[in-house]
Length: 370
Image 1 (cartoon, helix red, strand yellow):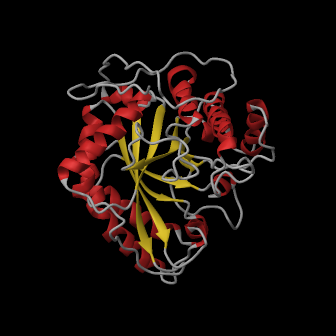
Image 2 (cartoon, helix red, strand yellow):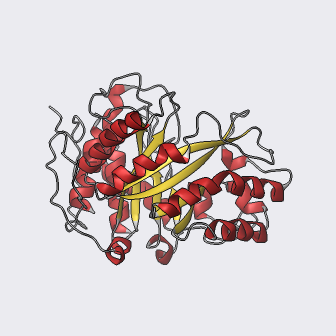
């Protein structure tokens, strides 16, 4: 039976961690089902910045219910579950949109939560002792291509539109002293081709509203680029990376084999860069070819559930080996109740981890490895 930690009225902050343990095989499980609640620990602001970020990515889904009591009720469930995984940070991911790959404007719609929707989630997470980051994710509507290949026809117009769209959320982040605002993710083609002065303008405008950590998450391939025509023009480029480095391995590959696969990719990255890196998103679908295409969205095949746990364990060990600053595991879905959902439910996406062995791997990572 799943255990629900009691968080109402508490201010619990996860301890900085226990010395690393050796790489271990991960058994299948029911997902954070037997973890005791941590004792309350008060953290100063300076200590927070020195902590390894042990994060959970929460994806805000489209919902017709946004009244305050309902949002608060769902937020308590999500926050409680995040705490049960021994995390210390929650990343609230939400979508905004542009119509075409070359569009010069972005916008919000019914699939985007308003600042008023997000405020109670932030307050509940903070009152429970969690650090919070906001992470708006751009989605291209009329294309089956990812945002990484988007390139606006008129970059200056696009930059102004992004600023106009995100400023209410930056203001929200400032109001509630949100730990980080990850304003962009995987703008691979744009960061390679748009002038640095344009990025500088946008970043400075955002900093005029939000004084916390303003971050950008590079795509996994762009993160590896050091120089040349595809190198980024944007300042502050390599603090965060979406960790989807593929490994040419079958579904029964060992954790050690997966570690070796990632190390082959990361060997070109300077140690000083690695030690300043946060893996802002690491997820994997439950599918036979998931190691080779961790970014994929295939139909779920439950017999491959252990692959997710092995992948999460591998990434956790990489973070430890390379002395990285943190990792965020993808994903929990708001407003799906992680305590009542079953791992075989069609309501879960292929890369979700609630009630799946991946949740146990995350809990082990955060409570014992990091």
